Image (cartoon, rainbow over all chains, first blue to last red; front, side, top):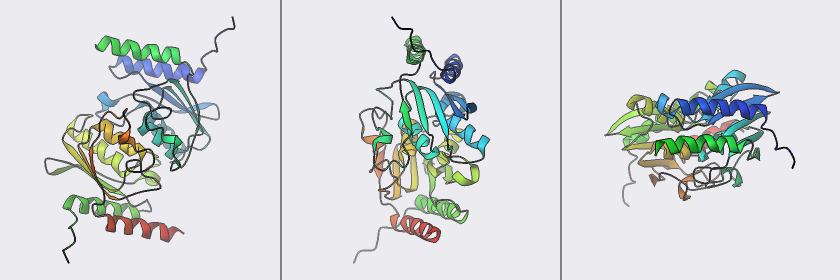
Length: 152
Length: 152
């Protein structure tokens, strides 16, 4: 039996952020933006803490990276996120010109990349990143399941 | 010949914000969030000024309104925006639980409500606002045409 594909380090960092969000009572999702092998922005869900409906992990990581670069376009940057991005975050990814998106768990209910609005699939989408799903998905899905089970 | 339908005051306020954005070199779009007849958040495009790919008028207005209310859900709030929202902003509108969206000019190239991703049209969309397009669209479209003509 082959060894399982190891979870890449940037996804481990996103999973740590997801765990921190969950411990703070937020939906456990985390994200990092990477450029030239270095993290230049990170985020964890903060909707409730910040009273901000846009405060998803991806949005926070993208805003932090853009501030760091001093540019509203994140050319040559990758996003690692523990959950399939929603339509809002997929739109932000396209606006930011993110090159590659690596996500953990698929989100058939709330996702907007491979489900629902499929934001990158329309001719109107100005920029389509390469998308790789299922990276570290077992850990990401277990975090989410644990969070929602505890709330029921 | 009947008098043309007058542009409602909240759209005039959004158009003023759009003009300010255009004067600052940003795509001229403005938005206000209204609750109980009062503006509780406003925004104009600030992508370039703020180095922020998410800084669309709608996102800024929604974040301001949520901070004002101290709640990440904008229950019983309406959004007035001069241009059809993109997929990112439509996603934010759904997350914020905005009740009604009034927009000015349709955006066949970049819109995500009545074009492209049609974010509210999918079964996965958690909240669908009532949407009214074409409110003050002549003024909104003229602003955008003038802006892009000057850049060519």
